[in-house]
Length: 178
Ligand SMILES: [Zn+2]
Image: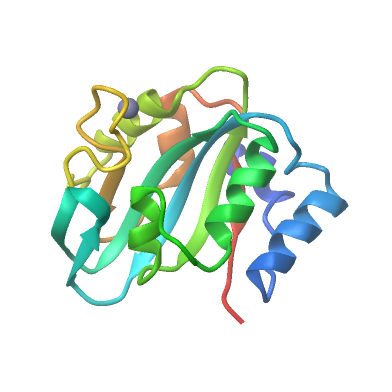
């Protein structure tokens, strides 16, 4: 455990249901507010399989940890966006919705802030050992990035990545299925 992880330790809470995770986080600590910010979803895919990702097409995903970087600067801020990402997918809209139909979200890393840093966050993730881009342009339709989804066999260390990405107060939300 590093200092950064200790600082975020208070934010880590295990809950039995995803919806409850969001509610308890929001009500107990006020951390998941309407403030804007960026986030990383840690999605776990148990078995390698082809997945149709909207208009990106049919993509062969390896088993492992898939990290998706996004930003929340609209109404509802981080709380609104993360509630969407932690609830079951009804009608896929974003690329990550398609992946989430088979790869549940195990944890979220996030930080509040006005600036849209998701491209820098994705670039820093791509520099972590073992990172691979499986789906070029995933989540990056509106920017010049290679992709906002990075695949890992094992998830990278959050605090090491936070240092690389220049994030001072990274918060961690653990999600565990019932
Ligand atoms: Zn980008």
